[in-house]
Image (cartoon, rainbow, N blue to C red; front, top):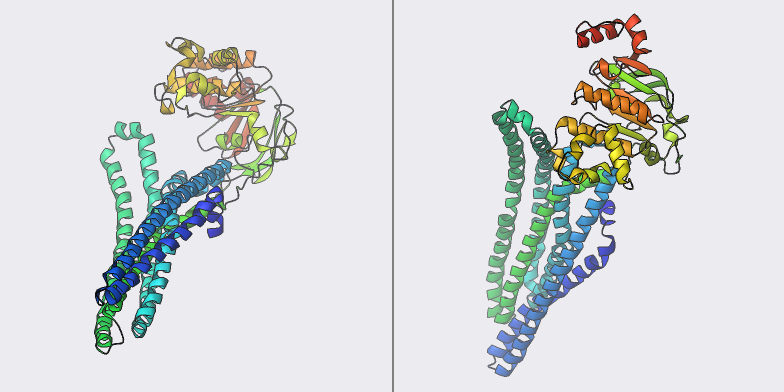
Length: 575
C-alpha cells in the first residue's frame, strides 16, 4: 500500500527529501539552547562573568534564528511536497476510474469513488505532510533531548528508561482501539455522499412527492453515523495527551527530587538541572507530537487503504490497445450469448441474433426483459458471461476498446448535457465537425427548429445538466451529438420517450432516408417507434421471444398484438 502511494510523489521527491533535513536542522538548533542556557547560569551568572553571558547569549539568539529559518523553510517544502503528492494521487485516481468498466464502477459505487477522491485524498495529504515534518522532527528531538539529559544528568536518565516503554505501550493501545472507529466513519462518508447525490439530482422528485422531511431524516441519520464513529475514535484519542503528560510530570517530580539531592552533594549544577527540565519539556513536546502523528495516521490509514484499492484495481475489461483499429461495417451478430451482472442471476440467456449492416432494428419488451443489457454488450460496456458478440464480423473483444466505441454511438433515455454552449456539447461527438455538419445532424435529430429559434442559435448557453432545456429537447440534442460521431452503429435506448409521436416519426424518417449507411437499433416501449423497422425483436425474461416485421408479428405474436391494440386503442391490425 505505501509503495503504491509513495510512488505518486514523483517530481516532488526533492521537496519531500529536503524537508526532513530542514527539520533535523531546526531540532538541532532548538536542542542546543537549553545547554547554552545552562552554561550562562553555571559559568556566567554564577561566576559573575558578564562577558561569558554576552558571548553565550549571542549564540542562543543565533541558534534561535537558525531554528526559525529551518522551520519556515521546512514548512514551505512540506506544503509543496504534500500538495503535489495529493494532486498526483487525484490525477491517477481519476485516470484509473476513467479506465473502469461499468461493472468496476458498480462494484465501488459512485458515492464511494467521490469520497476517495476528496475526503480520503485530503486525509492522506495531511498525513504525508506530518510524516515528512513532524514524523522526523519529533523522534529527532526525542533522541537529541534524551542524549542531552544523559549528558547533563546521567543518573537521572534511568527515569526515562522506565517511562518510555510505558508511553509506547499506551500509544499502541490507543491506536488499536481507535482504528476501527475511523474506518467505520469513512464507510459512513460513502453513504453520506450517496444520500446527498441522490437528493440533489432527484430534487424535483423529492419536492413533487413532498418527501423533504423523510429525506432530511435519512440525511440526519447518515451524518449522525459519521459523528458517532468519529466521536468514539476521538474520545479514545483524547486520552493520549493526558496520559502522556501524566507520565511526563511524574518523571519531572522524580527528577526534581533526585536532582536537588545531586546539587546538594555537588554532582550537578543548577543550570544543568534547569536544562534537564527544559529537555523534559522537549521530550514531552515530542511525545505530544508523536501522539498527533498517531492520531492523523490512525485517521488516514483507512483512507490510504481505500485509495490503494482503487489504484491497484485492474479494470476487469481489457481495453486491448493492440487490437483492431477499424470496424469494417455495422453488422452485428450474437452467438449463444448469456450475461449477468456480477454473481447475480443471468439477465440474458442464449441470445442468437443477426443484424445486417445498414438495417433499422426495433427492440421492444417489458421492463426488465433485458433490452438495455443486450445493447450494452455491442459497445462493450460490459463483457458477455458466455458466447460472443461480433461487430463487423469480429468479436468485440478483438477490437481496441476506444476504436470500437468510436464506431458505436449510444443515446440513452436520460443523457447528460454539459455546461457550455449547444455547439460545444454537439462537438463532443466530433471535435472537428464543421458548422454545416452540426446543422445537418441537428436537422436529422429534429433539434434544428428549436435551436435556430433561440437568440444565439448554436452558441446558446447550456446550464449544468441541460437544466434550461426540456426533456425532449435534451434527447434530440443528444441524438444529434451521437450522429456527429459518424458511427457505424447508432443505438437509441428509449431516447425519444420525451418527444411527441410526430417528432418521433420525423426523426425515424430522417434516419432511414438521410443516414442510409448506418445500422440503427431503436429500443422503445412504443410500437409506433419501431413498426417501420426492417425487423422487430421482442424480448421477454432475458430471451428473444420473436423476431419479424411489423406485419409478420401482427399475424402470429399475441404479446405484440396486445401491445399494438393497447397503444392504438383497437386500431386496424392491417395498419
